[in-house]
View (cartoon, one colour):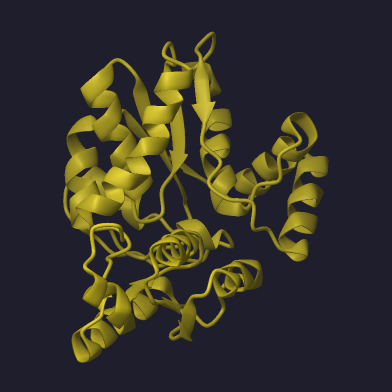
Amino acid sequence: IASLSIAERELGVITASTGNHGQSIANACNVFGARAFITLPENANPLKVNAMRALGAELIFFGKTFDESRSHAEELAEKHGYRYVHPVNEPLLIAGVATETLEIIEELPDVDDIFLPLGGGSGVAGACIVTNAINPDIRVWAAQSESAPAGYLSWREGQLLQSPMATFAEGVATGSGYQLPQEIMRHKLHDFVLVSDDDIRYAMGLLIEKAHTMSEGAGATGTAAAIKRKNDILSKKVVLVITGGNVTLDQLTGAISVYQAR
């Protein structure tokens, strides 16, 4: 957003999001004085909706899935001339998100493994770029729900694929792979882990009890993957990236129930 001209800022920026990316764009537009339009699925997380509104974004609800709302954002950008920020295939976006991994290495230079949830893939792609440049021995792990595995399937098969999605964790609920992050991940990602939705719920409960950290489903997906692959990271220094805490009461209740039952 900082790179946009005054005219572009005044006309407006548009993107699509299930919530977290939208909050970051809304915040950046607020800081740099740009209009922000964000398309969201009709069933978007109400906590994320309120946060984006509080940041001054103009919200447009369209479709039942992220990909439907993304297509609508692209149509509106072409129709009105807004600067379209692709939620994934945007080099400057990936560069910005990558700074979180840079900060991790600056604060913990001897880190061995980094686990991140994957929705579209910008965060994981950014982590791959940074670790490859600074210390290729650091292993980057991507994690996704097996109820929305398009990113994993695209990475495994080496081509962009689509798949059904039924996960409750809206931040990782994407129905297709995306070209730019997949190209980066294909050569630099250590491994990709699929976890069940109940694995994610368990991880949410574990984070609450052991780390006193409130995480939404997508945010806990990397933790769920680390638990699943615990034998691979014994005695390692591991970072679990928690990407959001916008959890509804129903989701929290479900997570605690699964955690207590195991």
